[in-house]
Amino acid sequence: MSLPETLGFVGLGQMGEPMAAFIAKGETPLICYDRVPGLAPKGASEVTDLAELVAKSDTIFLSLPDGKIVNAVARDIAACADVAGKVVIDMSTIGPDAAKEANATLTAAGMTFIDAPVSGGRQGALKASITVIWSGSKAEMERHQPILDLFSRNSFHVGDTPGQGQAVKLLNNFLSATAMAASSEAVLFGLAHGVEMKVILDVVKVSTGNNTAIEDKFPNRILTGTYDAGFFAELLNKDVRLYSQFAEEAATSNLMGRRVAEIWQEVEDSLPPQSDFTRVFEVLQNRGAS
Ligand code: NAD
Image (cartoon, rainbow, N blue to C red; front, top):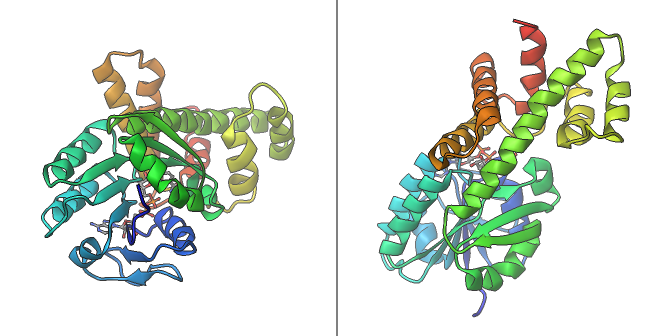
């Protein structure tokens, strides 16, 4: 199978813009669309109408906030003229049911839907080092591999059914969210005993409690006071809520999931919209033992 001749990219936010910027450096022409104009990276063209992007693109990437928005955009795409044979690769985190819904909408229009959420954060997107978690046609993954290689370091085919990629992405983000909240509590405990934050981080980083919060978020975003990991608390809360909801449905143990989901709901409620998720540390610090 040959490479697509023209690529489209919808959603140029904290993740989408850097991913699109790397795709634009490749050889395949790239057309971008966001509901906010002026976000397209250098080397890509921009349109202000989704239908124009759909008409001109063979493969369309999506990086949108949530399942409701992805499915609204999927319905708009399916309603465009001459869409049969085109491919939609959704890199948003939307949960298994929303991925299945988008798959049904687009396959009914003769299109191929790929559920391909990503991990690695904005920093990973800026360094083209993110992980792509692909579920759907393996042949399409092989065909698109040269494009995936432009913006990711690892790509995994985790199953043939859209929704399986979301399941792996959600369990990953549950672990990441748990590490972030638990590490915040642990660091506050050390500080309360008069130990400096940097010392705590140096010790744990080379000990058995190490995790991505200790290794990256604390030294680079919290110790610095910058709180700029590039992921909104409400988006992580959405992911943990979806994880807990699907764990209940799957009837797998959800003791931790339930509690971690409650914590992140409280974090979102305590912060202004679009606050960086690393501010969980401040929320737990202010909350104290209550
Ligand atoms: P974001 O809010 O920064 O970006 C979303 C973009 O979509 C915005 O530019 C917004 O204007 C655009 N948009 C919204 N509705 C639209 C519509 N109807 N049509 C066209 N454009 C529209 O979010 P983000 O952090 O870039 O995350 C995008 C997705 O990737 C989310 O599903 C998120 O959970 C997931 N994700 C984020 C990170 C991260 O660290 N930021 C990491 C992995 C996965």
